[in-house]
Length: 243
Ligand SMILES: NC(=O)c1ccc[n+]([C@@H]2O[C@H](COP(=O)([O-])OP(=O)(O)OC[C@H]3O[C@@H](n4cnc5c(N)ncnc54)[C@H](O)[C@@H]3O)[C@@H](O)[C@H]2O)c1
Image (cartoon, rainbow, N blue to C red; front, side):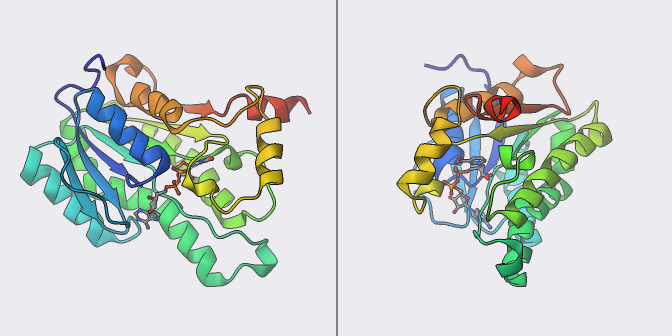
């Protein structure tokens, strides 16, 4: 049972059909939020407290629909969790320009579009924004040039937005490390073993462990936290730092 940490709140969660986003939906419902669950993939639409929106976060029209739905269905918006992402793995010299553009559009521009469309509602509610970056923002890993650039951009954008929109809206960023979700489906056993071996926790993280951090940053328990980065990586970054 939750503690009602988000009681009365309305939250938009993107990338809600899978992995971390799906875990955040589950946790927010436990904490008594109502949720607008956004994904480019189809979702089941019959859960109490959940309004599903099918759409692409890199499309401004999706965000106009989301903001209109928040106003029309709930009359408010308290939390924005910008979490949807995709990756095309290739080194920069082999990455097609379209694949670069697509990753920057979904993983970085989508957050700008979200804030652009939702800021009025978030301000009215004195709301909270939580961005999903990655440890890739700080550490280079082969084959992720556009993904890493977008995730680094989100760290900067999160700080910028916190300054721009405080004191009305708090903005914070989570940086997950290796979390076992469908995003790992195409990744081989040796890469998985190496990632787990690189953590102090000696295991993959679970999506609900990131959802707990997102919940903290979304609710009043973090009322004096803004412009911050919260690393949720089982110590992966700390191990890198000491290497
Ligand atoms: N899993 C990890 O190890 C890990 C590590 C670091 C950071 N992250 C970050 O955490 C977040 C969630 O990752 P995950 O592992 O749950 O991923 P996932 O692949 O399981 O889920 C991502 C979701 O985003 C959706 N999506 C993709 N493009 C979209 C678009 N254009 N519009 C709307 N929805 C779209 C997908 O359909 C999917 O449901 C991402 O921002 C990711 O970069 C994950």
